[in-house]
Structures are given as structure tokens and as C-alpha cells.
Length: 239
Image (tube, rainbow, N blue to C red; front, side):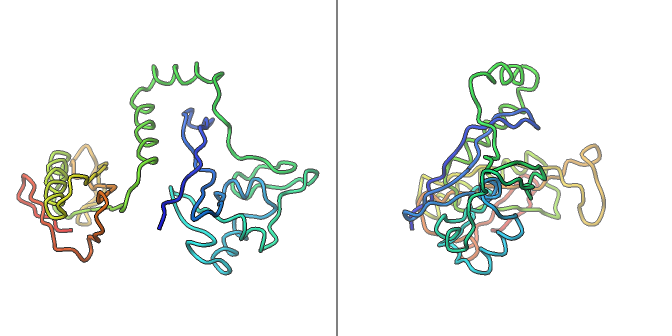
């Protein structure tokens, strides 16, 4: 099955003062789809009504699908359900933004050259935030097979997780006989471990979120031969 070709818009987030790529539509198996925020802004329907329609009447991976943190609904399905564009003289209340507008309205602000000064100032004031957003945008463009979250009862600090991910990548590459294995991960401080509330000031225990790309190999972690990861503190993690 082909991968959906996402339509990405370079938009400026007024609230967070950052530039970001937004998925507004997609082409999948020669059918055009629209993301739900765009549909709510331009079509005469609400978020709740649209969700009920595609879940009850639609067929998954044909009439709608999930990708990039959004739901995409086919234009064909919208037409079949008599969901039409908002008349140019009709005032509606957007069920997502809660704002009133007359006629169809595209829900994003396009990024243009006049905002370059804002972005340069943002980089000077908070380069870590800006660079982090750039990394996220690049990750969103890549293909990933799995999104996995792992939380352990055993203490795992940042160094332990870094070592575990290095071992995991090597072992998985050996098992699949592929050099194209790719992992992107991020750790977060855990605030609850074994029913005892902790903070980053008291304890550095972390859980992990990771994207996994098998590099073209067709494998499923839940049924493959277990891979054990050994960390510096002798804790073994099996996926």
C-alpha cells in the first residue's frame, strides 16, 4: 500500500510565536483528503458532527485515515454526506477555534517574508525552542513505522536511556540484517514512580517516547523474537 503524500503548509503560529509545518491535506491511492481543521474552517459542519459522520458512515483507510497527528477525510466522502462549503454570506462559529467568521475561512496563517524579522528575533531570544521546533518539523517529514512509549518501574536516567537506545538499534539491526534501522527518541522526567511522587529535583527517573523505522523490513515488535536491552544499571528491557 502506498504512503499518503501530505500537503504541508509553512505557517506562523501566532500563539507560540514559531514557524511550523502544518498538514492541510493529502493524496492517498489517487484520492484527495482534507485535514479536519481545514474542513471545519471551510465546510458547513462542526467537529462533533464530522467525527460522527466518518466514524459511523465512513470506512477507515478509504474514507478517512489518521496521519501526522490529524484525521484526513476524503472529498468524495464529504460530497456523499452532503457536507458542503460554507456559503459566502453565512456567519458560522468554528467548533475548534470558537471564533465567528463569515464564509469559508482557511484556519492557518501562511508564513511570508515579512515575518523573517520575528523569526530571527525568536532565534536570538530562545534558540533551543526554535531549534527544537525545526527538529520536530524534520521528523514529521520522515516515514516512521511505530510510535512507542516505555515507562519503567526501575530507575532510568538519561544516560541509561541513551545506552539502551544504542544497544536497541544495534541489536535490532543485527536481527533484521538491515543497516537502515532508524530511531528518534525523546525522554521526559517521570513524576510518578511506584506510587511515590517525585520531581526532577529529587530524582532524575525518565520515561521515553520513540519513533521507529524498520528500514523497509516487515517486522512487528509484539511478535518478533524478544530483544533484550542491557543498561549500565543492569536493568534488562524486553520489547
